[in-house]
Length: 144
Figure 1 (cartoon, rainbow, N blue to C red):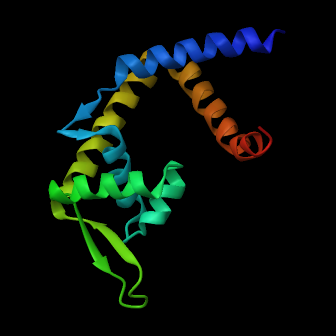
Figure 2 (figure 1 turned 90 degrees about the vertical axis):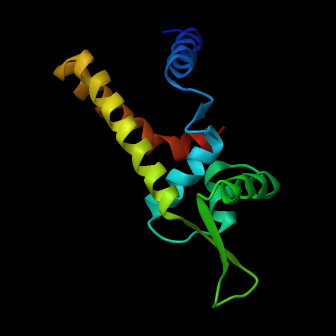
């Protein structure tokens, strides 16, 4: 089997899928901002900017700019950590929580429609393969 050729085909379909199903701006915020809002919502607690930077694998300067933008839009709050005054904790405002939930619901309904269109057998197979890849990903990324 020619894995390089198969990888090229996979990347092509992945790009087409992302291009066709993602907008640059949703609800007036950029994708990176959306990721930050959803990340904080999933954590269910205040987070450090460095946690977000590590998770997204982007610079602290880029995270600072993203947080500034989200703050101006009223989606996050920043407060000094009472246990360590050098650290800043980031949390969602009620508007930020509402936005995260809207995005979660949209993603869920889109995924349901996609899986339904595949049919039960292919949908289960796709989820099985995605689970397998998610378990393999850390090892694959370490050995790149």
